[in-house]
Length: 259
Image (cartoon, rainbow, N blue to C red; front, top):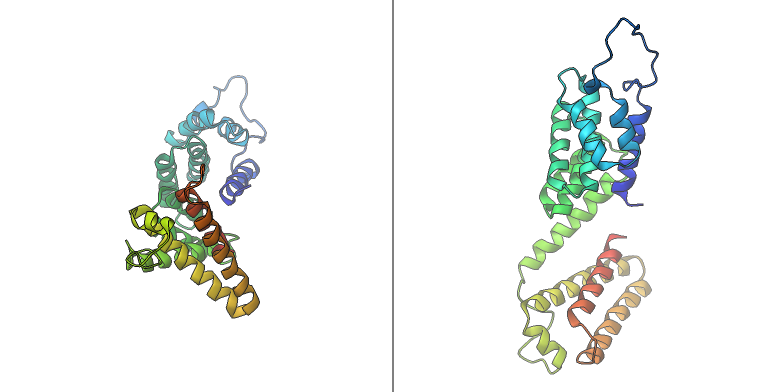
């Protein structure tokens, strides 16, 4: 289960367990009293969120959010539940909007800052994601994932910033290359930058590993050398996709850098 999925599960569990959502409280109405306003009854919203029924959660929690009779703590929890439903529907901007409103009502919610940060990262807005991860870690220094997410994203931004200085240049000299595969890379701006990024990340992970164990650093560099050998041998053969293989290599190196 992903970190965001675990967080959604914990938030739903909190909704179900909260005494503020008193679905199990004793009833005080008599037969002569009117029925309670269905818009402020939290039970349907709670049930839909717990059942991962996104469509019903959006409707039922929306009624709770929009009712003037809903207490502030209940409105926050309904916003969190509906944000999770929007995420399952891939309506990321709406989910962010609900988290925005929840944080306006209570700016001390570390989990909500973290959840919103994950959505900003999903949208590709790394700066806002980094700010939200930092806020979550500041509010809760023991948050299980905020610090790690902040660290990896900061490293990613640092790496991207360094790469921008050499954007458009591969990890070798195009003027003197002899290999057909390298000539193909030099002819493609996308492949040029993929090659540069592969080399930059590889240098970083080899350097980090070597500081702990020279043997580990040499092993990682051998992996890179073997990738280059496979790339050179495979290029031009039927079914070989150079861009796909380079992206796979970069993904592997980023995973090594992260962990």
